[in-house]
Amino acid sequence: MRRVLMAGAMALALVAPAHAQDAQTLADIRAQLAQLSGDLQGLRAQLVSGGAQGIQQAGGASALERMNAMEAQLSQLTSRTEELENRINRVVTDGTNRVGDLEFRLCELEAGCDISALGQTQPLGGAGASANPVTAPAPSGTPAPAGASLAMNEQADFDRAKGVLGQGDFRGAADLFATFAETYPGGPLTADAMYLRGDALKQAGDTAGAARAWLDGFSAAPNGPRAGDNLLGLGVSLGDLGQKVEACATLAEVPIRFPGSPAAAQASSAMTGFGCQ
Figure 1: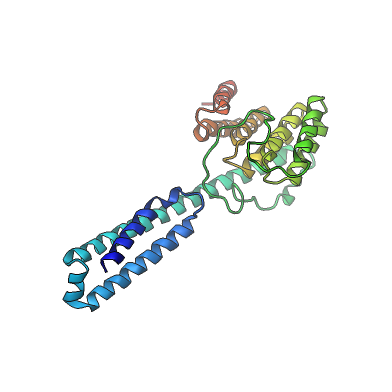
Figure 2: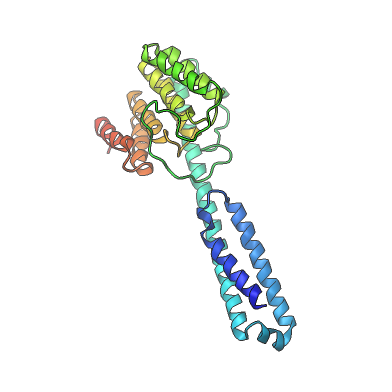
């Protein structure tokens, strides 16, 4: 019995910081908490059925006290896990609604855009979105990170699109970057490609198209290596399109989400330029 109690205490200590482990989801943690709670209740039943002798063998009255303490901690952890899950869901829902509103407004500004064909906005970060560590934006056009796995021809296709951009064929480069993102979804260079597509469209004079490209890039990876740059580009483009309220709200998010990043500093300067309050 004493060993069972010790095992329960060790399991509880391991579950408490489990929310910081990337490999686990909130559902996994809640399932573990429920299983551990069931084990403790089963152990309590065994102690009670064993009478005074069984309780004495398990360590006396202090055994029940330790079980009560562990069950109380389990209850608190379960509540905190549920609160965290609800908070994440609210953030995703609010962010998705904002993205949907921006998509609608951008469609109104784009020639030939069919609002009825927009469909339902995908959840922010994708269907399986979860909280991920925020990384600072990478410099434009950086090679794939060390250790990243590149598909065959991926680097060559990316370099070809960059080369076209460097030659001044902005529309052609935008098309190549769009094709690249569709061909290599989730690849180590895709975030750069989606950002550079917006940059190419901006230089081609298609401000609304650039705003949509950066919105797509941010929606696909709201915590990715280009998220801050995409949000900055989107905010500036909205300001250039005369959408001052939306521009200021978008730019204000950059230093909040990506403090200390180059994009945050540029966003602050852009807000001053647009006269944001």
